[in-house]
Structure formats: C-alpha cells, structure tokens
Image (cartoon, rainbow, N blue to C red; front, side, top):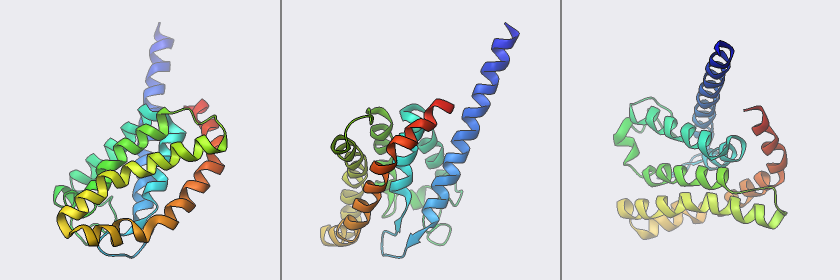
Length: 182
C-alpha cells in the first residue's frame, strides 16, 4: 500500500516537472521570433502542437493552461513581454485570440490518433494549427480591422506555418514514442 502511494507521488511529481518544462519551452518559443507588427511570428504554434503530440491531450492541455495562467499573473512568458505589457492587459491585446487558440490546438494535436498515413497526419496537424488562427484572426480584426488581420495575421505566416506543419508531420512518429515515458 505504501509503495503504491510513493509510486503515485513520484508520478505526480514527474508530471508536474513535465508541465513546468513544457511552459518553459513555450516561453522560449515565444521569445524566438521574427519581428512583425502587430503580431510577432514565433515558434509558439509549432511548440503548442509539439506539446500536444508528445504529451497527449490531458497533460498537453494542463501545460498550455499553466502557461496561460503564468502569463495572466504577469510573468513575462509571452512574445514581446515585458516590453509590450504583461498580464491580462497583454492577453487582451492583438495576440489574445491566438493565445486562446492554443487550448483547442493542443487538444486536437494530443487527442487524435497520429499513427496514420502522412496525409492524415498532415490534415490533423494542419487543423490543430488552423484553430489558432480561427480565434486569433477575428480578435486581431476586432482590434485593428480585417485588412490588418489578413496581412499581419494570416498572409505573412502561411509559408512559415506550412514549414512548421511539415516538420511536425515528419517528426510525429518519434514524438509519439516520448509518450511511453510519461
């Protein structure tokens, strides 16, 4: 009985460390950026999907929610922070819709079976990236207008997203193997 409690405690600690490491990875990916205005191009969409694939939907969702919580309480985890503000005020700015889209993205990437052919993998991973834009672009359009949202929220990122999707599709098999260690 006591061994089971210790094993469970170690499992919880291991998952806690994985979540913290995931939020650190998301923070680093937010800081790696190509400067655009008003929405910087970062590696966050790549990392969110990577987390979903590697950790699964439950632990992936937990990681993204903790990351958003860290940002909401004022930790400088987002792209452009602290220079462009922190906390809730940053989250309701131009990137707010994209941040919310991370939740759906990690769920899709972590939930669906990616042990399929390359076309199904491409479709699922593309969908998980697309949902970030479904919430991000309308929010950006609300704040800055549809023309700005199209140019700075979609057009400038299409090729980069296709490249990120391609890398994830090719890497999926190896990323899924990580789940057995969780």
